[in-house]
Amino acid sequence: MKTLIAMVFVTTLAACSSVAVQPQANGVRLTHNEPGNECTFLGDVTGSQGDFFTGAFTSNADLETGARNDIKNKAKSLGGDTVYILTQRAGQTGSYNDDFGGGSQQTNVTLSGNVYKCSN
Image 1: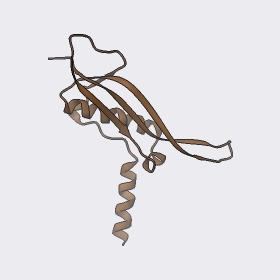
Image 2: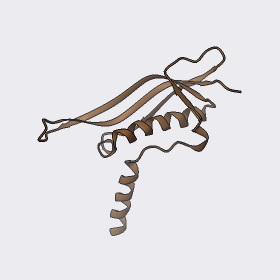
Image 3: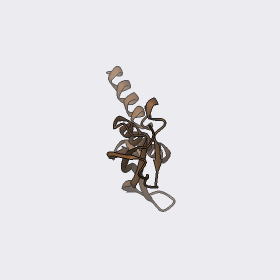
Image 4: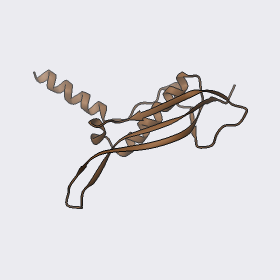
C-alpha cells in the first residue's frame, strides 16, 4: 500500500512539470509572422499542457513552456522547423474565494499553428 501511495504521489508531481522538448525539436522556431514562399507548408499542429486536475498544481510558466515544447515536438515529427502560431489560449476552470477577493485558476494552455519547412 505504501508503494502504491508513493507511486501516485510521484506521478502527480511529474504531471505538474512542463512537457519536455525533444532534443531534435530544440531548433524549431515559433513565429507570429507567416513564412514566405521559401518555406513549404507541412500541416497543422496543436500543442497543449494542463487539464482540470494537473493544471491547478502547475505554474503558469510551466503550462506555457509545456505547450510550446509540445507544439515544437509535434512540428519536428512532421519534419518542420518553423511553426506559424495561429491561436494561443489559456483556459481557466473553477473559481476560489480568498482574502483578496477570489478569482480563477489558469489550468491549461493550448497553441495551434501551421508547420513549415524553411531550411534545406
